[in-house]
Length: 254
Image (tube, rainbow, N blue to C red):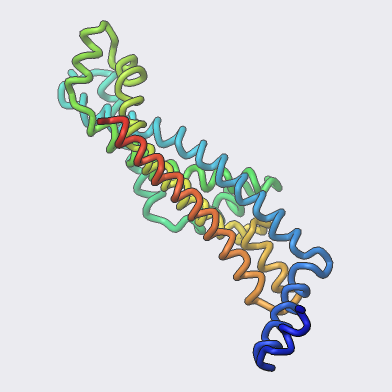
C-alpha cells in the first residue's frame, strides 16, 4: 500500500521526500550522530538549572542589599552600619551596571579564558558565568517585588517583635517571592536560550552538538533545524507552565 501510495505522488514530491529521508539518515542515524544533540541537551539543561539556582541566590542577596539601602539609609544615623551599607550598595550597583551593560558571551569568554583560565571544567565555568549574569536580572526582579510590599508589613513584623532581618526573612521575602515567581520562571526561559553561546568556550551544549554534526556532514539545515525545534519545544513547555502558575497565583489571591 505504501509503495502504491508513493507511486501515485508527483515525481518532485517523491524526490523531495527521498532527499529529506537521506539527509535525516546522514545527519542523525549514520555513526549515531544524534548522540551529539542528546548529549548537548543534557549539558544545556544542567548548565541552565544550576545557573538559575546560583542566579537566584545572588539575586536575593543583591536585592536585599539594594532594597535595605533604599528603605533605611535616609533614616540611619551616621556610623559604621550606615557606612557598611553604603559600601555594599555601591558594590552591588557596580555589579549590576557591569553585568547588565555587557554581552553575556563576552562575560563567558572572560570567565573561561581570563578568570578561570587554569580550569578545564567548562561546565562549571559556564554555570558560574551564566549564574552571575542571571543574578543581576534576578536581583532587579526580586527588588521590585520587595519594594512593592507595603511598609505596613514591616511595621507588622516590628509589632511581632521581629528585627529588620527577621521581618525580611519571615514576612517580606515570602510575599515578594510569590509576586515575582512568574518573572523568575521567565528568567529561566531566557537563560535557557542564552546558554546556546556556550560553544564559544568549546562546551558541547546542544547548539554545539548540532554544529558538530554540520561539520561532519556539510549539511547545515537538518541539524540546526533539529536544535531549533528542541529549543522551541522546551520553551513552549515551560511557557505553558508559567501561564498555569500565573493563573493559579491569581486565583489564590481571590
